[in-house]
Image 1 (cartoon, chains in turn cyan, blue):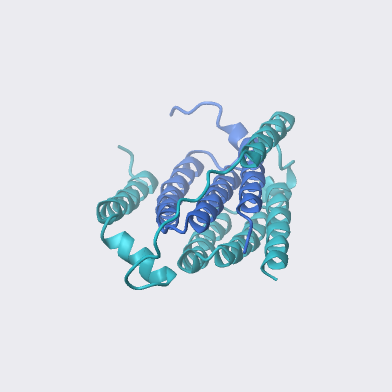
Image 2 (image 1 turned 90 degrees about the horizontal axis):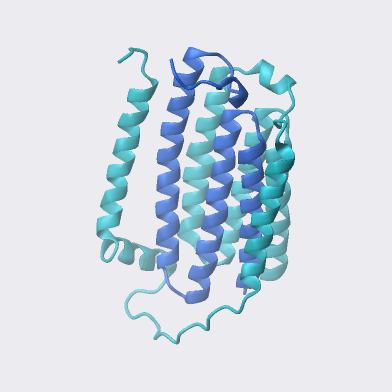
Length: 166
Length: 100
């Protein structure tokens, strides 16, 4: 059952990614990326990462893609939709993508290291509590640094996009 | 039980598709969207390894990747606004001189 669901999600993800990259209209592309992100959230659920699936839906599908759609409507690009979607160098791009995919595919064919036997985690079980405990104990410093990165990005976006020249 | 190898193959294919989009598209906003596809492919493989190792650290790394992606979107689209103020349109082929 899980396998059938996984293969459906994988096939739908690849199909929507291909459609997102090849559609002519930018708005259609972003909507196909939305379908891709929702299917990837399903994959996260199947591998037992419930919190990651929720964050994927809320942050990626909810916030980031709405931001992209807002920008496409704001800039209003009628000329873009009329021209060819790919530049003249698209065969090179296709070759590079194919090469990377083939190399990564063969890398997973190599024998994966055996999983070390670890004792069952003591304390509260369950995905969300495990992630939360690790995030606020061992990864507390990186967690705070991420907040600094987000603050710097907010300030940088305002500085870059404002009207007054330096 | 999902096989981890299939997850890694899915991740590889999605990364390749995102790379084709980033290198081949003319629209600068769709190039940024292709970067998002590539970051998501990496998240798939991180979650798969986390599932295989029965260890939450892979998921935490994926959360950090999502946070960095959000920061990248904010700065990248700010740059697109600054570019489109100087010359309208969002095609990378118009940006032959990055100096004004």
